[in-house]
Length: 98
Image 1 (spheres, helix red, strand yellow):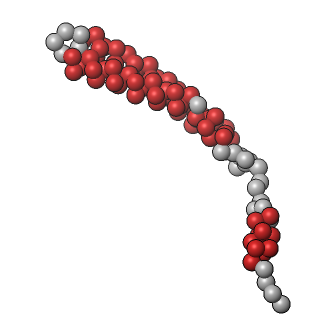
Image 2 (tube, helix red, strand yellow; image 1 turned 90 degrees about the horizontal axis):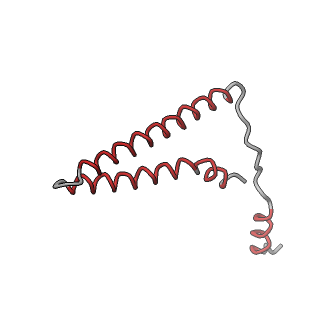
Image 3 (cartoon, helix red, strand yellow; image 1 turned 90 degrees about the vertical axis):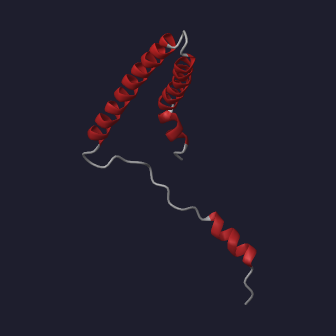
């Protein structure tokens, strides 16, 4: 009896592993929604506060303190990047769902 490795490996690749749908564990749906709501509020609050702090740094650093203005400008870019990432978080995670 001769075993053909190519046929055996092809047959192995054809069989797909089980892929059940994602389900919420009983009793955890409302808790998870509450935690996600708190995190979204925290991101929004931190974003507004961060932009305001960076704006103050840019205003204060206008004259004779250019390093402060520079740090405010760089900080605002990081804040906008973080807010952009937070705003597409559900889309990014959903992209990996099969």
